[in-house]
Length: 82
Image (cartoon, rainbow, N blue to C red; front, side, top):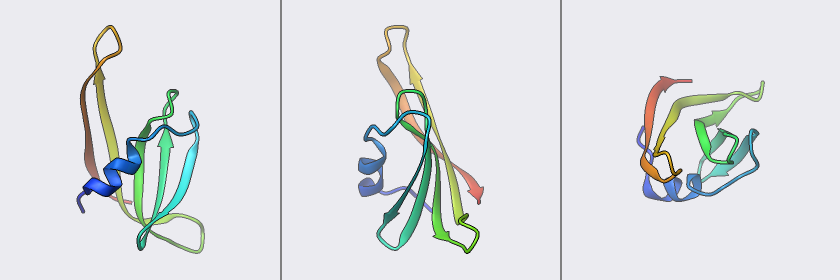
């Protein structure tokens, strides 16, 4: 699975710091964990099962910043099945 532009737009927003956020995105269920700045850094996308876990794919975000805090590199890596 690949992350599309609409989903990237939603993932580039700021959320509550250091929380797990659950949302619906089209026909998929999303769960993502945020860092201390409120940026999503770990994403689970798929379908929610009876135990509240998502069956689907797992992604992690790589964000590289310089010493001044300016974002240099930002991309999502597919880490396999969840």
